[in-house]
Image 1 (cartoon, rainbow, N blue to C red):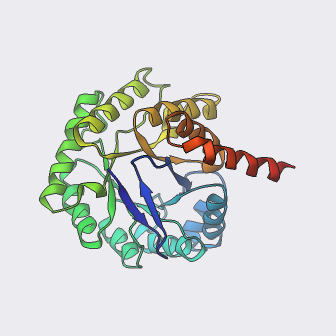
Image 2: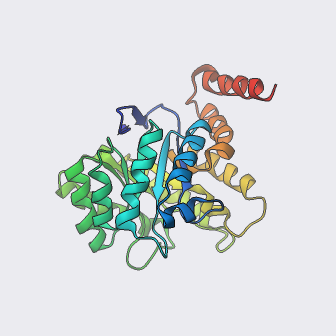
Length: 284
């Protein structure tokens, strides 16, 4: 399955098939360290622009924009942040919101073909967000969660994804525009968390053949040496068919490129060796 993403300026990124794992830069959100939250609250978008530039320079293929937090008016701020990112970058965007009003205001800016993140199995999200996917011809993330939360079994996660796929089918949404998140959870809380996620990915891939996405850093939440855990988990996920990873691109790019190489997604290691040469020059 090949999923097409398009930047606001027309740059195409193809997801899936024999192509590389796509890196989605995660840092434009109100929860990390640094000036982004203050910028989103104040409306001063210069730090957002700066972060967008940094992430693309670090190797992000797509930028995710998330503004929902206490003290932030999402309807006002999401379009502003989206516009700011569009002004300084030429990569596709992923707009994270379950507020249909805020989401549509952002989409009305002319976002190319973005990703909408995310649509759960809850009826309200299916009814409010999928029509926007159809109207604006976007892609979207189908999240393996419903009104009861994230299920504790791979089988139930597959059931939720199946329900979302069928609902999208009913609206005439192209299957290629569906990207599935089987949900990574902390291994500090449940030692089987990663295994359940990987099993769900296997099931979705076998039944639906859709592209797969993960916010992989969740798996290490609450644990020391998080980068080590994230890198190993991402390698396992790539081996199970992961095609998009929401990551700190600067930290995770070399590990994902190595995983792609070992999974036969880098002909004659050209991408990996070119990347290493670039690093050597930068450090010379």
